[in-house]
Image 1 (spheres, rainbow over the protein chains, first blue to last red):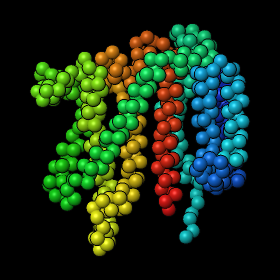
Image 2 (image 1 turned 60 degrees about the vertical axis):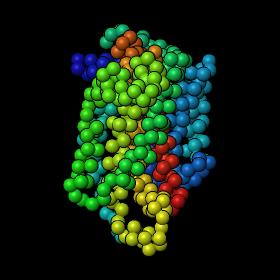
Image 3 (image 1 turned 90 degrees about the horizontal axis):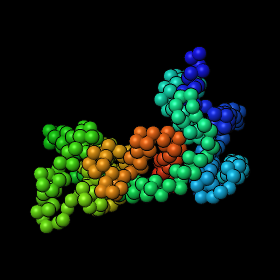
Image 4 (image 1 turned 180 degrees about the vertical axis):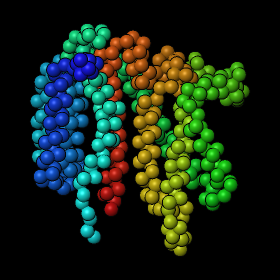
Length: 96
Length: 290
């Protein structure tokens, strides 16, 4: 079947599918939140004034580098990096 | 002023979204999928977790390539941006045939394909048959870009400056032409010096084009492949092997798709981070001044 070969070409795995579903859900939720309650720029502990979307972007890119640092420089489990990243995301969205 | 809000216009973005999905998002997702598997062929792949990331992040040859890449990109920016501004300031301001001629001459290097630029410089910089190499040797300098790492570096850098400074100059020239004459007249009344005019009128007004120039030149130089590949082949030794060449060796030369995918994603994240930092810093400097 066409669809099967298409997904076969993309070489999906369960963890990567969950990862993209996670990112996609975050984007959808943020969009709905933005439509329901539009945000304004504000200044938190980050050195620049940010919108909610900016804070999400900053958290995501920092999370990426946290994961890379944990994988590259330590022997810790990837779940440690994940835990750190989720905490960072929540803290940044709330107080960033 | 009342603004009309019509969100139906967002539907017009859909074709663009579909295009980006097929040209960027789906391939990127595939790269992410490849980066956690050992791929043998279309039907044989084994999940390996973060093993490839570990391998790539702990590979000292790649650390060296990354360092070289940063040094190269920042050298390119440090030379091309000021030089481009200077060239734009020196260009004739009147709209006549001289200006057109300068613009055409300036745009010429931009029209040459990358691999041809590499070939031109490969011949031009040779000590035996190339004018540049011969001239430098004749001046008493020991210059051989195929054997000396520093010479190879300087040649690649010079080639990039020759190829891309015109882009910065043309962008700055268009920015300078957009400054209304009234600003200069006001400066003349105040008896502003040449430096004051540049510092307080021209430079702030060039900010928009400079953001574009810095971003374009950073991204492009950070992904440079063809020119150094043709000119030096990454040598002597590994002296001019930049990130993209290491990546190509891994993906095409050794056909290690998994590690190459992990490497590509790390590469992508670095480009994304640096571009975001540049963009945010420059745009926020502007806001704070206001």
